[in-house]
Length: 86
Image 1 (tube, rainbow, N blue to C red):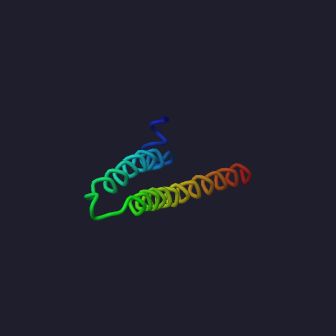
Image 2 (spheres, rainbow, N blue to C red):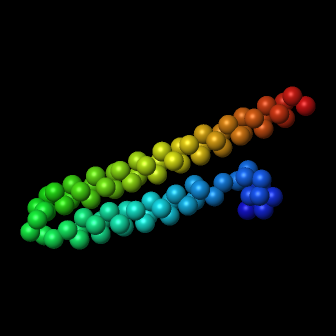
């Protein structure tokens, strides 16, 4: 990692952090769905809770990463445009 780019916010760390957040939230979804007492929730609903929770966590993290990919691509376009105008 180029430290100068890091200090100037040209290189972002949040996309890497989001991947860690996704893994932690996936584990939390599974543990939360399994922690509900068995007599209150049928097994099929428990599986649907896990699938829905994992889907929601993935969707949220992907949306955040898409925003950062857009930022990276716009930066590349601006850099290419600046190089072409010199």
